[in-house]
Amino acid sequence: MGKIRVHEFISLDGSFEDPSFTFEYGWTDAMFERMGAITAGSDALLLGRTTFEGFAPAWKDRTAEEDPGAAFFNDSTKYVVSSTLEDPESQWQNSTVIGGYDPDVIRKLKAENDLYVSGSGTLVRAMLADGLIDELHLLTYPVVLGTGARLFPEGTDKLPLSLINSEAYDNGVLHLVFGPAAA
Image 1 (cartoon, rainbow, N blue to C red):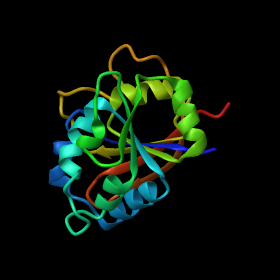
Image 2 (cartoon, rainbow, N blue to C red):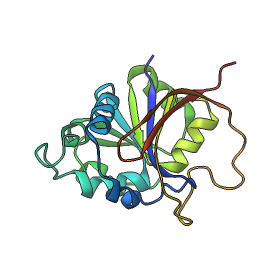
Image 3 (cartoon, rainbow, N blue to C red):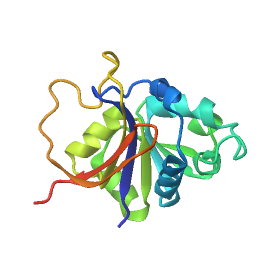
Image 4 (cartoon, one colour):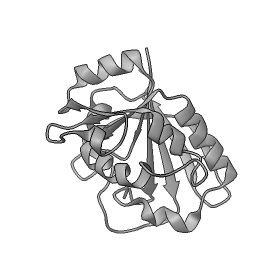
């Protein structure tokens, strides 16, 4: 059985819509190492349509010299959850649509793969509700944005989680790792 690991950039007030707010903080060596470990432990990416459409042009031509994560993002299989996206392979190599959200389809993928998810808020919220996520990695930035879509918007059902690990980086970013709440 594989695992689903989710990674999100998030502000203190829960905004995750536009990760450009993270740029001024840069990346520490420890952050590169941690993210490298998360992606190295993954066989494929699982993305929602909106995130896929943002990632494809940002990553498809990026090289390992430009970004150490390029090989993982470009060479890995990408499963896209969408009922409307057509021909993802023409947008980004190794991409396939698996249809609209279906927890049974994702369970089957999870049984065969370790999956990495980034962004994809609607997908992440659905998978959390269905108990499909093993690790929720929140890179939490020391800033309140006051705007932007929230990972957990008003009206989100209560969701108990357990803290698995936490790490503070030299740039003020906290890496919080949550898993399903202990029964």
